[in-house]
Length: 339
Image (cartoon, rainbow, N blue to C red):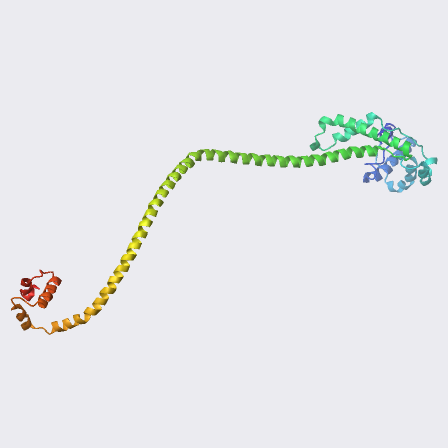
């Protein structure tokens, strides 16, 4: 197609197709082009000065219809196609191609053309692919791949009699496939590199944290050692105190046993005393009654004794004992106030 474009441009023919055909400007450009050509012819016949800047006649729309047919007749058209189907099929579809057209067969693109086209497309590739330093090498490799594919297609036809065409479109698709695949792989690689960078950053942060912990542990080592020593001393002291506590516990158990025995003895004594008290209480109450019956005359009578009876002496000795006095008859014989 590039060779066709170059040939048409060299002979001054307009190219309608690809990025030109289908543009809105095309439908106004062609009629105006042939209208100006017709105006030039009319002006030349009338002997007037030829100028493209001259204003168009007011009845432009009236004469436009008369110029459409000459425009159609004089407009050169070029049809570009690849031999992807049998010639007889094409001729059956478009019989006028045989009678009203000149068929030009173009040889496959030469190596220089393939390299030039590849360089053009690689130069237009996205900048993020970074192909500037390898455009020449990639162009040569693309040319070699296309040539190898063409040779394989010929070999395939020779062996299986099935025609496969390596067209310029296939070559352009090869280049586009490479750039698209390179972009996809580069995106995947960038994603992996980003993950690697994030992982490396996290490892670095973790390493810094570990180093800080090591420094803190080194600083805390003397404190830990001192704590170990204090703990060992405390364990020894606890062992000693535990031994003392065990001894004290054993002594307490002995004391508890002795106290239990003493309590049992005291309870027995208490029981005995209570029994004796119970036996003595009647006599005590009788003595209280007898004491209440004593009067001053009885006391004077007791004092008049040179030697009191034994029971009287025992009673008075008990009274002196209770009053914290000497247990003698002389003390008991004194005035009552002294007792």
